[in-house]
Length: 250
Image (cartoon, rainbow, N blue to C red; front, side, top):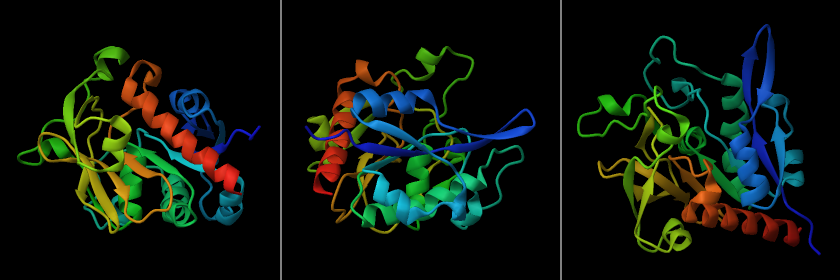
């Protein structure tokens, strides 16, 4: 019997009290362990101190998660962030060089929300920092006064690109998705291909052209109560299968 694949999940570096901790949300860990049927491995956000080559030798796939922090705008030539914006330079220094190297090495990659934005920046793309202030765009933020179930409830539709990886996984043309983000893809990075758009035209998903394995970024949160959503179940199952194939090919 083949072993379970190891899926690395780069962490956030957060100050809790007087000490820094490297943390990953439990919902992502559960989606990897149960949805992808894999072993989640938390990767510390230690930037250049992390041996990327050794990490890619050990892991069979990588999941880049959402976060309250945003990619620092100097990475994509954007204007300075609004005062009070949370950043995580250690995570930037870890994930931005890791993402294209992992895809080039043939590791399956799934990027969610902040991970989606990191992936775009890693391939040379740019970000809207406040999508709701861009004329012609919807307000994609969640209402934090609501319960979590309401915050993560269906917010709008996305239209899937015919023939794309996402359409193949979903086996349909449209999905209802949640929406909990301020930022969004402004200019798509090189080698990235649109997989889905929101009704206002905002890019909600992309894949990497010519990737030899699963390489997909989503702006919404499929990990939230994934087992209750048919598409989310199919997504994590497909990601897990790609990681198992990677493990088997070693």
